[in-house]
Length: 308
Length: 318
Ligand SMILES: Cc1ncc(C[n+]2csc(CCOP(=O)(O)OP(=O)(O)O)c2C)c(N)n1
Ligand SMILES: [Mg+2]
Image (cartoon, rainbow over the protein chains, first blue to last red):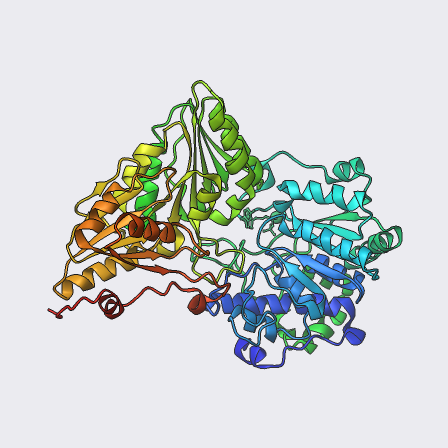
């Protein structure tokens, strides 16, 4: 696998009409591999938080949101930004702190946004983005404009009081916010049971009368259909909703994987696009669902077919 | 020579490990890299609990003050000082109320936080002005820049009733730690002096000591002698050591690499100028502009040539 030659290409977004969400999802995996390889080579000073294992979640949100909608993200915004980019290059250039990056080299990784692609704001401070999302949704009510705000958070960030406050605020003021919890049972190096009690988000949402859906298993079609349904409910009812996605983070918290010589986690593009079996790797699940032929049509087009 | 972070950790852990009735807590405190080494070597005992907690800093700060009111010695380890901005209300309001009340057997609350200001983490991850938190809340803070200060501050503060923040620089984590040969200090740890000279007093605020050290060395190489001091944002500080030094040299260079409009460096320059009107004072303060990126965001410490010119000193390179 000649990573250098792939990186030298235009790295354009796959044609949506031809390859659909499945194509996009596989491309997100490839682009993450490229960033991971660059991280291994110490190409960037900024620490990047990749999301191997979140591709189905990200693709579903990307599909469900319309051009009227906006995304408000966390430190783990890399895959979302990739989903919203026409090409990978402005993201790589941002990580290199160059003017040609999406944020003109001033946002780095953890705060990377791309308003042209519908990513309004990202915050590295846990819980910070949730109230900002409420403000953006309020602006849509005050200066009437269609669309919703999708605010992403994690099982760690939702421990901040701001999560609860934003649910209450959005519900109280009829704000069009879709709260998305990426629950990967991970907060830096702590699993949930190592740091807190369980939080039953369904009950929390029920308490403040917000529709809630739990999604797990990485079935892309189900993910897209459910996310679209909730997005529609938010837009039509002028009221928030919440989805919790159970995901498996396949990479280290930040930086390259492996992160050190004896790191038990291994991710290497030379081993192929897949990182695990269908029980934990959404791309393996996708391959099983699509069948090898359709899957290879995509990987062929991406120039990485022999890998799979 | 010991690494900065290893040494600071060992000093702090040593004092925390001798606390009784203690709550030692933080996010990812006892996992992974131990907050990049900051929370290594902590040991639990029957009366000292080590607790890994979730991500809710406002609560962590409230818990610390509550535990302190309940007579416990609370120590909160924090990966990044930025996150403590979520505790500002407790620092300002809660602690103010506690100080105004008569609480028997008041415990202690110490926050140990790393400061990330290398410039490339992102616009939100560059808050380095511990002094600004201290000013708003009228509390004492200590920027630990060398082994002698760290030991003196840890010994005096970690078990003392009341609240304080100890900060260390992630930027210097892997550097060799400065171990001064001599140390004079004010009893409140607001001022430390590591070397005494006659031509110039170099006063370092926040994490600017490495720059001050370089300049002091360069002064020596030019046949001149400088005093080298550092200052902390302490509540009701005793500036006598600082003023005594200023009177002796008649020339004071203040370095302050905290990002912000005014702050400790400005205050110290003003205090010296007003108390010793004949003293020539020059402040070198990090710009308060909002820039991001390693080169843009760096502290512009003056070169030795600029310093000599500024103070009208003539040195001969030895
Ligand atoms: C207020 C605040 N506290 C602590 C941190 C340090 N921190 C960065 S990422 C992270 C883990 C967050 O976990 P989660 O929200 O589940 O996101 P994940 O990394 O799993 O995607 C922590 C504790 C921070 N960025 N902000
Ligand atoms: Mg998580």
